[in-house]
Amino acid sequence: MIPLGIFSVITLAIILERSFSLRTNRILRLDILQRVKELLADNQIGEAMTVCRRQPSVMGRILLSAIMNHDRDREELKTIVEDAARQEVPTLDRYLGMLGTIAAVSPLLGLTGTVFGMIRTFTVISEKGIAHPSQLAGGISEALITTASGLVVAIPALIFYNYFTIKSDRLILEMEKYSFRLVDMLKR
Image 1 (cartoon, one colour):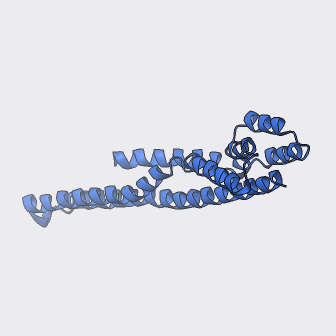
Image 2 (cartoon, rainbow, N blue to C red):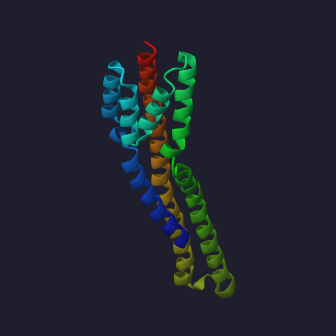
């Protein structure tokens, strides 16, 4: 039960952190994109780079890589943007591996508790016979509580793992879409 308690606290912390960190308006920063587009339309490349540096965000770093390499040809610039987006994936996927591991391991820990509870029950039966139902109930109760606890931790962890993974992938695609639009603007 102690590991399951620790896992439940870690799961809650990850869910709260990812809920805050993966907000669309925090990652995409369309205000920076709009400002950069305006500056590039006026051919103020240096100022556009300064805007990206002043506003540290995932999208700002991707835009900065595109602007810094604006003199490259279109295909090379697209490759640079894709590479910059790939480098930002670990930022968006932070802690998701741990959340997935907790989702997978928690039911196994609950099952381990079930096995120990049943061993305890059979030990009581072998020592005292079936005449003591209250002692048997303790082992069976232990078995059921640990199984339920493992599932209570695993189910939300799995749900949020899938949710955050999908959201991260969607954000990456959105950033690439906006970045490619900027590449097209730079090459006009």
